[in-house]
Image 1: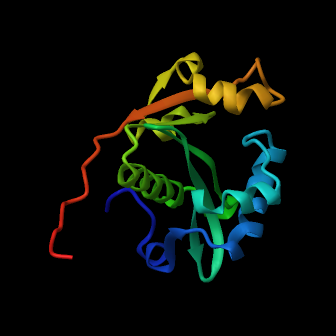
Image 2: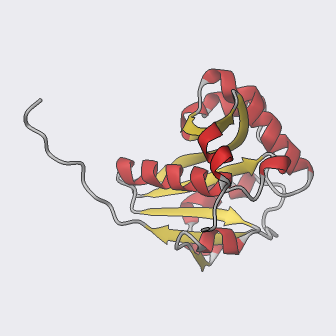
Length: 173
């Protein structure tokens, strides 16, 4: 049997774009890990303002994981606010979220996606590689400069070069 979540858990979950009704659950997941120092806090108002960036994993009508893809610049996106409920970790939910977000990045035409993380090996499985934070000036001057950890950030910058496949040109519509 391969690595991955048990079939009964896979059958029970759905990965989808976030909806307004998911904002509170997303904020609670992020706050949980922010209190542990593993994510930056995102107030509920910011989750609402960026709800279109988020994807969630739902099990039995309950949000158990979230992640966001934020467009940073013309060809650059960021995977951020990736969180999975403690009791659901290790089942492939984080993997499913990142795969969903990377598909979205490709669909948007992004050429590169990065993440700031404490868990390098998780992102390496998708092909992300470690890069100097200074190679992401748009992120630094837009977000990092306002972070309480700046300039002593202890997160690792990871970057993935995407192979962009143009949507097919269907003239029959």
